[in-house]
Amino acid sequence: MFSILRKRINQKKISDFLHQNKLLIMQSTDKFLSSQFENGEFNRYDTIVRYLAIEDFFNKNSYGFKLYSKMQNKRGPFPGSEERFRNLIESVRKNGLNYNSPLAVGNNLELIDGSHRLSLALFFRVKLLPLKLSKWPNKIYYGINWFKDN
Image (cartoon, rainbow, N blue to C red; front, side):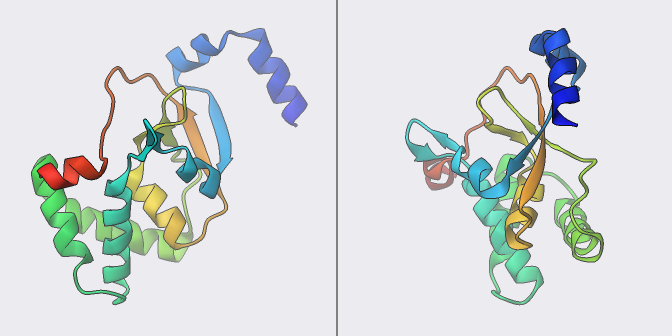
């Protein structure tokens, strides 16, 4: 199966796949997480906050959703985000991770969109993640300094 996929990819330029948002990759969750560094520093503390919110959902702490709400308010605000996240947690608990909803990543596998799903994959110990290479002109920064400043 992979040889067929490789032949199809080689027949078209990768930039064509990116333009059409069709290039999918399966990546181990732990390896993907280890690629979330910018200039030697971890860049996705937002994923950690979301992980703490999941723990709060399952009564493993009492502060995760407080941190999550504070983060979301500094980012947005995004009305209803906590309720949507709670629904997503429950859905993944019941049905598992939806592999038809890949995480969007840049050329260096930096996470563009999908931090909620990444935190859920970490919590539920999902071994593989579906990734979709996407074009995104801006750098996304949720390093420790973003949290100190906000």
